Length: 394
Ligand code: NAD
Ligand code: UDP
Image (cartoon, rainbow, N blue to C red; front, side, top):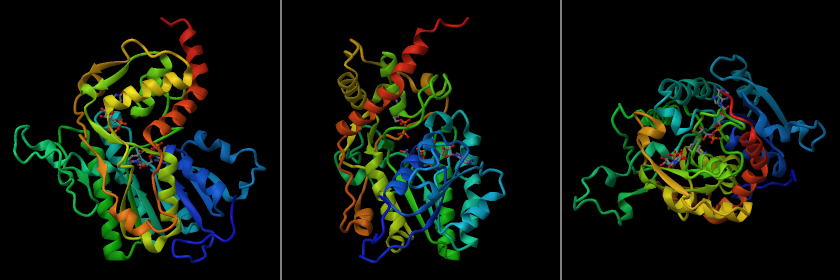
């Protein structure tokens, strides 16, 4: 419970602070709000256009943290109240973004505006008012690995040598595809806002931390098409595969499901963010990879594991053909491209935030899928059954 006597990693007592959290109503924001309300004395000014995912923290009005969280329905694109909220807070955390790959090549302008232009006033207000900023970027700023651009038979393509693929904040290059591959518009916009924040730090003394999440997954991620999101919408892979499993359809493997990802459980990742919030002296001026290098799978392996886990939690037998292959053009349209492999180097986070209590993303892929798919089944199975039993409208 909210806590007197909190100390930072250096044993110094910590004062309660006020946090302006932009994008608080999203997947990561909802878990961060939950953590801050249940385990710390900090206050949150929660800014978003939606609040469905944090409703349970806002109502009823007699919740134990009711006086520590306020929701402000604000679109940061055009709302003059934003600067006032940033001024009222000690720290701003910016999570707001369009961040689903299906949008990058189909809504490239919205993607660039959301990830760069709309973040500009946030950075400016923090800098001008001497307020600390934690900005959410992405592992996608690394783009593709060096090896992926070399010819398949190149002697330089040492796929088994980590020097060719482990992604390090301070040394790895950012390697994007050509402009017509609009997939990279997101990564490019995120990279430019990172550079701007870094420059504000260097020239104007902005106190900043940049977070690069590596595929954080868990309950409340995205939406299930046709249930709590548009029927034609394409969420990120966890929700796509959950949707297929809930509907008893084969999981669609884009371009053979050969891309590799490391997945980290949202609750492990949030622990790292809390350490950044409460240890400004250790976190300021740094860019942090936040992921779990031990949970690497191909997308095909993820599909296989999700099929097994779902069968366990739902009691339903898996389909005879649990997956089908689809081309990226068919699934995402023109201009899609993919990151081939994403393994975070953990040196910087371990060095800066690695003393007791050491940050250690400990949840295995199986365990995190089990708790997440239990949530998906409990939350959506009935609604899906109902929607599937309705006669189709002509
Ligand atoms: P999300 O889509 O669930 O949350 C983003 C929230 O921002 C949404 O609630 C949305 O309504 C809000 N928002 C967007 N534009 C807004 C605006 N103009 N005004 C007010 N609110 C606005 O996404 P998430 O997974 O929680 O991601 C949060 C951040 O982390 C993003 O910046 C994303 O790029 C980054 N990130 C996340 C992951 C991951 O694994 N989840 C990976 C890489 C990067
Ligand atoms: N993917 C897939 N089937 C789906 C959805 C996604 O094969 O139904 C693949 C996608 O092509 C990518 C990976 O899963 O290789 C992860 O996609 P996600 O949308 O979660 O985001 P990313 O990790 O690419 O940012």
